[in-house]
Amino acid sequence: MAYQTIEQDDVLDQPKQQLEFKSYLGAEATAENGTSAGASRTGYRAERPANTSFWQVEHYQRYFDVDTSTVLRRCYTTMIPTAAGDYIANQLSPAPDLYGPFWTLTTVIFSLFVFSGLSSSIAGYMSGQPIEYDFKLLSIAVTLVYTYGLGVPVLLWLALRYLGVTEWSVIEAIAIFGYGQSVWIPVSFICIAWVRLVRYISVGIAFGLSGYFLVANVYPILATAEAKAARLLVIIVAVLHAALAISFQVLFFSYYPVDPIGPGIPGIDQPIGGGTGTNTTSRLI
Image (cartoon, rainbow, N blue to C red; front, side, top):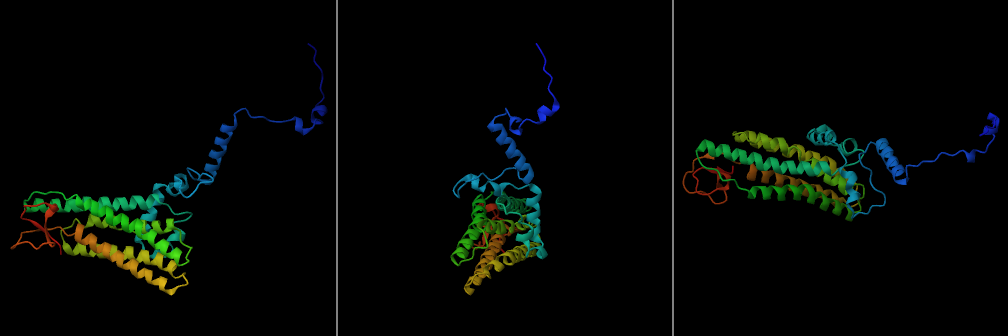
């Protein structure tokens, strides 16, 4: 075998097209590497797939890509009146989510049923009466909370679209109403207290904080409509919100032990825990 001397200048004089780098990893590996790099640069755990339609599950994937700290911050900020006006710009940026509102509403349902059941159990224990849990309250809580937290914002968004208001997305509407119910979680726990005044004050504060938060975020959107009558929708929102607070007070926060005097009043006096044949009643006050 003979060796041939090659000058360095001869190598440098070769056309650049002859010097190429080839990858033997395959197209799939290259695509995966590119996707991982892109995901790490954007900071998202999962990117929205391209060319997804409104009816595909992948279309909503980005609305559930949120961490726990962000969800908690978006929850407790709704209880701060000074932060209500800029909530969409400061808290729902860069994009609103559906994960937080769904679990917030679900936690409200869980809190209402569990803490009201605990309150009625304590009332029965103090009165020496057996307790029968009323699981119909769970279905009532599911209907009330999900209808108000998910159904009302969708209907409001459709009404605004009909009136020509396009500055508010349905995701933002659901996020506002969903996160806005966060205050009922601590209130459900506080209302275990036997002092009726504490319960009334707690429900009143929750109604005021969540109501102010909703009005502060909904009314500016309604004001952008050309039809002045659109602003009246805020009255409907306020009435529905008041009805929700009253329903919570009557159905879940009105248990206390009291010995019955005379026959019970239908619709007013109910056995604790929804049972029958007990002497201790839960008077709705």
